[in-house]
Image 1 (cartoon, helix red, strand yellow):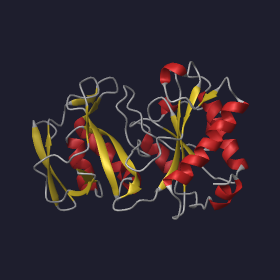
Image 2 (cartoon, one colour):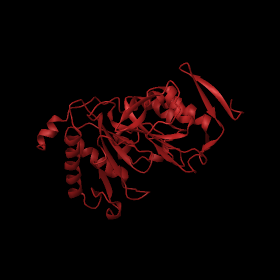
Image 3 (spheres, rainbow, N blue to C red):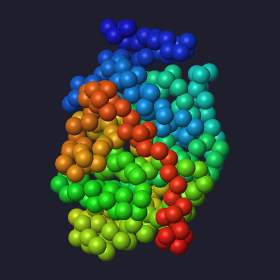
Image 4 (tube, rainbow, N blue to C red):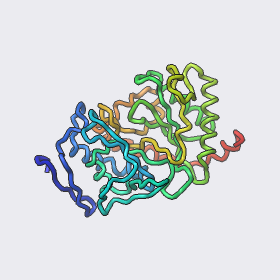
Length: 295
């Protein structure tokens, strides 16, 4: 198949046509479509964990990362029989619940996977995420800032996992038990954001408008809401380095590790060494925090 313009692979008893397998999707990193699909197979046990039962938005790059892209929420037509969908707010989302569906999307040059914060058919948050967004493309203080936020969470009894966004920022992921609301989590996020911006006004901001942030690092607690989405743990990103959104240890954060070292070329060795760092944290109740800050 690799020497032809198209071919067929069989996955989970489903036939998937792979078009232009030698097309370069990441030019600088030298990753072709067929190589990308092989990487998705390696990522699938981890990526699918955070994609199943979610409304999936993908970003497609038909001509690779150097070409134009578009967000796809509505499922394209026609669909293979094995691809499931779920309707929410008049949008027919893809339900990425299998390796077959993942590879089918990979063949369509879906290079990024952004699942919803809630499960299909539900109203509660599946987890809590703070999005830490630098105002500059290169921000040498980023990991220092993330470490400070992590310490604040720990002081509140909240166990969390930092993960690279795969782009410029870091997201702090908190596994939670059922029973919380988006409103409660947003208020906790606002409490933390206000506290840190007052304590470190030169470093942090909760200003929504980027033009008003100057060089400060934005603590985005607003993005976490029903109907919104964020880059999944272990999703590739359409950056020239072929980065992957990767969970980190807090020791790595304190040492100032570079997010750019986690790529499609390095992620398999990383997973063999570390496994899924998020899965190692038990789901938590935040009721004591909610009670403490009077929500």
